Image 1: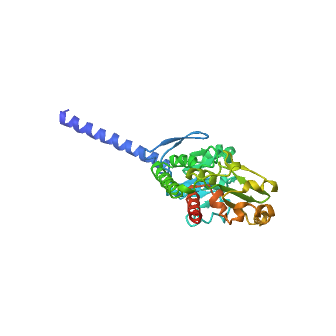
Image 2 (image 1 turned 30 degrees about the vertical axis):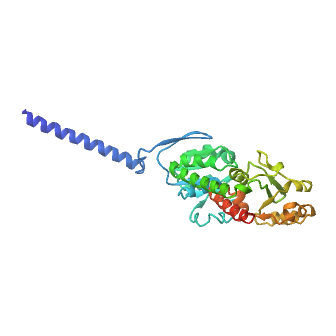
Image 3 (image 1 turned 180 degrees about the horizontal axis):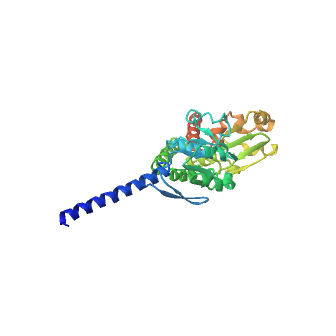
Length: 321
């Protein structure tokens, strides 16, 4: 056989082998539903271990209220989210952005079946809230859990940005917020010795909030002072008695009420604000007491609420310059 003929036969054989290999790859792609990782696989260390995420997720389910705000701030609309603690089903300040998002239960009672139906490619939750159902969730999709729900929302935010493969967008959100903190710190530099008191009313419970709370952390970041009894690194004094009303005093009092719709928290607020001992507080006597939105100053706990809290604080502090 001549050299040319042998070369021709070898070329044909190689072509058949190459085409066969391509066909095999196509078959595998079809068997997997046509979904490719795109070579962007990455791993995330979190409260439950290490999770590999095949590619930047497109269908995300979020299982905390503060996490929902984190996603929205980075331009990610979840396919499913837990219901807001207040609202039908979302807080007023995020309801427009959440149109079309499926409710998958509440933070304390997640609907696993509803999550599975959404076919997510990433689930983000919280160990403190949902540790028991983590094994079920990770069978549905890669699942990343934050350790706990802290006063400082930034800790969980950084984990969410990593899980979403959106570190750059997350860094910008944090930088923008820090810039606002810096602006307020400069604007009110001569008022940072103002002692700000935080009080919350809930059904059957009156609380004095300390530094390790959503609002407390933000006040400390700006540099505002707190009344001595509130200037401690823990969460709150719960179920306070009437005798503790003097501890609510400060140069300014901000109070917020967690009202779920049955009127009990509002009734408790009305009762306490009309107690003679409360009316005798120096801040109340001076008219330096302000009711603020509980969802924004405490319950939502996310970056959108944090920025709205700064808006409230700026507006109120301008009155005291």
